[in-house]
Length: 114
Image (cartoon, rainbow, N blue to C red; front, side, top):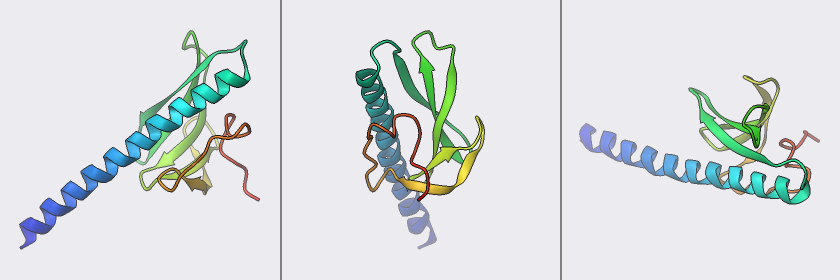
């Protein structure tokens, strides 16, 4: 019985990771498109890097030299504002799995708390 639970748990984690990374890919594409539509003179690209606790969303210029942290995604889907290059702020600004639409103000960073 225990082996069945482990197998089901592993399959569930694989499915959830696929959903999460598809959402992260979509977020990076949406951010890139929205930013480049808004600002014609300064083309950027958004990518991500997996960490132990978070997925870091990174903004780079077209040469790939200037980099900044846009925000972080927890593995449960919570969107966090970047406090520093390597550390997120404490409170969630939304959840990418539940839907996180990119608006004109969100191209710079996740929302401030209200």
